[in-house]
Length: 387
Ligand code: CAA
Image 1 (cartoon, protein in one colour):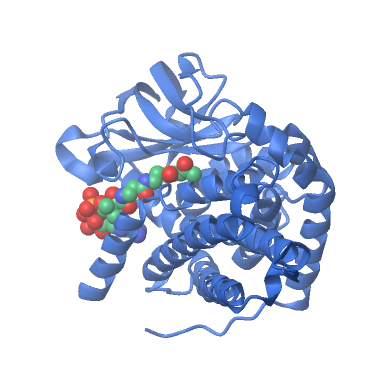
Image 2: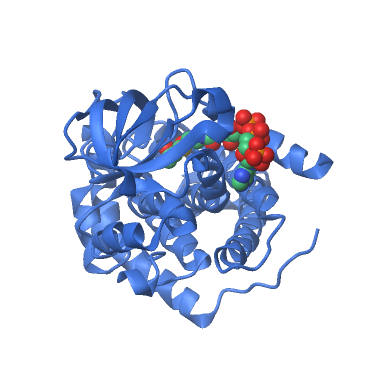
């Protein structure tokens, strides 16, 4: 495997400072309330849109900022450091639109990407179903051609930001006899007749981001809303995840960094046995391990982001699939360990809602599950090694 040269440029560091300042001032103060109430973080959304940070990946030709994958990672990382639910705004906007960037006809891109870039619409991704989670190709949602339209029927499940997003990339079966090669991708709008949403799932974490079913009942959409050729939808879906599992890694890094920062502050303040906790070597070793795991995962994620840029701009990047699964897996496993240890460092206080650590630990858990469980990531990595 070859390793690309990458290094955050000065602009990336400036971007980090900008996003951190915005997140601390406008997003962090609402994070506990968003978690308590389960309300969508509209304050964060407005602040991100006002600063043009809600979808930095959209290319300039579609009215976007045209930022590279590392910039998108840094935005998501810094927002997640303050509030994981809010970090799903830039992350899901990227997830919903990458299928178009990879595979859609120019007209479709021109119609749907500018509203996302301008912050007028969000864009979700609808792959999973009740019986098709890890085995995504087992989906049952049908799209049947009817002249110059398709008629969609079925129920998508676990759809992040469902109901708040205007647009959805929906994968559906166009040829049931063809397996994964019989799946096609479409843009569905929230306002299309026959689209409705299930109740909000009652979740352990990321409570401010609604997770709902997207129910499609005789939804007629023009055939021009198909993304790419018929039968290419599953490949587009998996190729998308090659780019966006990196954004889940970014979210995990941000949550972990938030927890580590709080824990470091706490052990310097808190005294037991007449000394600050920071004086105890056993706890110093815990902090060192936490920071080491975090930095290792961060470097892998940034390397994966460089691979994503190469692939997006037409340079062959055969190990992107490995790198994105590895980054997602390493960062989310690290985030789970780091947030759990951060709770431990705060002792009883860490276990209460008076501190943000228990929220961060709950939020970290989903990063090991969505965009493919970490067991699926290991399967993907092993397939790459063995092929
Ligand atoms: N890019 C492009 N094409 C790919 C690909 C990739 N990375 N990986 C596989 N393919 C192609 C294969 O070449 C094959 O095409 P051909 O038949 O033409 O050769 C086709 O896709 C099917 O591939 P597989 O036979 O490998 O497919 P599979 O059924 O064995 O499944 C899998 C592979 C890796 C398990 C896949 O189903 C998977 O990733 N599952 C996890 C699903 C997942 O991640 N869901 C996340 C939902 S989104 C979400 O969670 C978002 C959110 O809320 C924030």
